[in-house]
Length: 116
Image 1 (cartoon, rainbow, N blue to C red):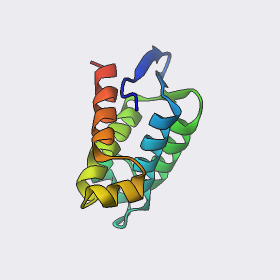
Image 2: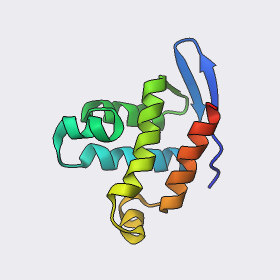
Image 3: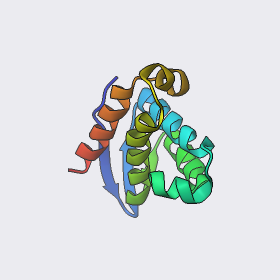
């Protein structure tokens, strides 16, 4: 999987150019957080967004042109980094997310690098 992410500043946000595989991984990490028990307060602590916002961001990522605000990009990064921490094993992570933990960490690094 390609971990490099292209981001272009636009009026009012950033346009992310993500591959379909990158979108799938991000959406699965977001879905994992949206489905977690604990309510909105715990979701905000984990990834910086309540469940409804997480679902909205997931839909934006799935679009062909993902125009996101910087706080929404932080949610993507936090979801990718925290999902491997919250899922107890590599096998469980792969079964739930459909990718390997290192792929989530590498994509999170790619997101951060795109803004560095």
